[in-house]
Length: 328
Image (spheres, rainbow, N blue to C red):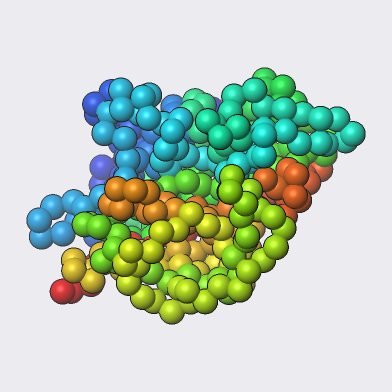
């Protein structure tokens, strides 16, 4: 049953509409001008996160501009994808579990299985609440072992909270509905844009170690010292396609981005269940993927951060985004 508590008299509101073929759920803070839109029917995608300025709403999510664009490009770029039941790559799409070799049939051009199974699955809205304090929407997908590469049962519940002062909190709860222990990793794959080229933005994140990758972006098992962005500095021409181990994720800010030219600023607040941070700068350099992950890539093989979830048990992964604008 869906519970709706939406009032036009509330500071926060929830609405539903279709734009360019995309069926969107909109969370709004009318007092402060923040908005979040989501596509429940396609992977519970985060479509927009915007702030009201003197020139109008500015959206910081690099999204799909139409349903047709989404269908044509999603499996190559995976913008805003929910990463579940695994994150990033699984080498050759194969892994061993309980003395059995399992293999995903659908693979990326490099031969890896990539970005999980739920990125385009239809999530059902199960709850909506709008009050004077926040707007939230909860969505759920019931995975029923329909891919032979992952023959397990689980529910994935995603809850978006738009809170006061531009805080967006996203919770993912994984419930093992089967009768055996399952391997699971969780994450997100959003691309953020603060205006202009990423070269001019400032970036910092609290990670003093980086995972060493091979040529196919598979971890070798080694951790490399990393000091590059411990202190905020301009991204410049730096190319990033790396995974970092956060020093102590505990709900405090672990990553910060700023466009000094327009004052747009974003802080990241992952909980302890998201200790890995994957960062990628695409060739166009107009956005940047910053991915909070529960494990390293290829965790089903290397076990780095892999969660083994008991039958009937659940685990919740949480990340918060704080959007603001400085005076310039």
